Length: 208
Image 1: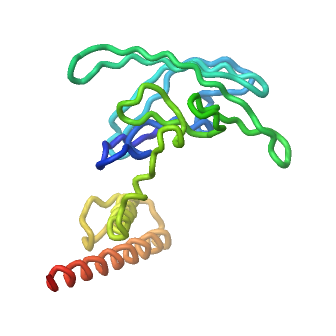
Image 2: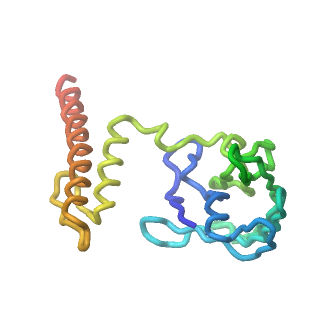
Image 3: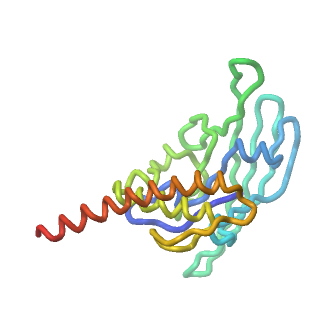
């Protein structure tokens, strides 16, 4: 499974700072399967570097409407070297869909909420819901200029660019020109917004 785990950015940990269990993804990728008993491991990697940032063993025993998942892990404290073993069970259940079928949910072990995602923030010992850990999204802490800069670089990375704002971007091999021009229009719009915030910042500083 993909993950970021790029570290904290001050204050309470955010959703993006830890590991995430996405039940919809786990079922779609066949790790968890209704009416089956499955075992294996879940691996998280940094989507930018490809480096593994987390690992946990699982035993998923799902029936027709209910199930449970056992999560086991052995970790080593980075400073003391002390080993810690975790062994947790998480219950699952289903709710009917409006047009037939059913939707699977984790039952948060702390709040009892039905959720599709569970989180393990830095320093925590077990997975629980976002509400249980009161986790904000990183974007909630960003200023409008920060969001604009992050969006601009995200669009650049989508095209394979590692350059800074304003630097030229080469069309990726195999990409159609129409697609490239559409993507470049988004990059240019995002960078225009960044430049606008930069001008405002300079004006504020010169007035001081």
